[in-house]
Amino acid sequence: MRSRLAALLLLTVPAALHAQDAGSPAAYLAQFDRDGDGRVSEAEYVEHMSRGFGQLDANGDGVLERDELPGGRGRPVTLPDYQANLRHQFRKLDRDRDGFLNLRELMQPPQG
Image 1 (cartoon, rainbow, N blue to C red):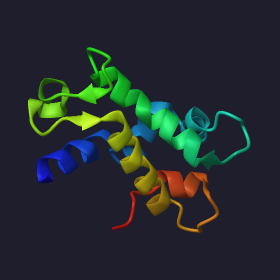
Image 2: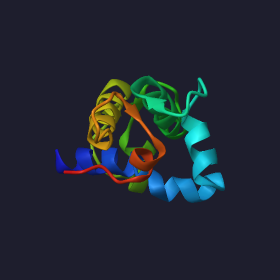
Image 3: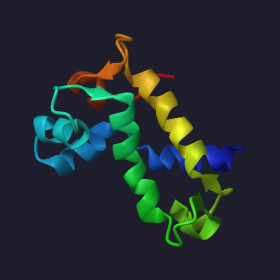
């Protein structure tokens, strides 16, 4: 169980680390914000973050097998399990509980 959770956490590295690749915080937010309303819905967050799963799923079967997981270790992870974890992370990030992430929330690591 721990190795499976570790693999899921590797796939959901805190957003602040990825923001460096986006060029600016506003550009990072725009990567998630598909409708351009200046905030990120749960659906937008899950859709964007699921892209990494798709890139790792070499055979496209919706399951990350051991050889597809970072480090080649851990139990298989299904896309529904991965997305459930993303929804959980979204709720942790949504500190004001409005159902959306603003830039400040998106940039902070989830709380325990």
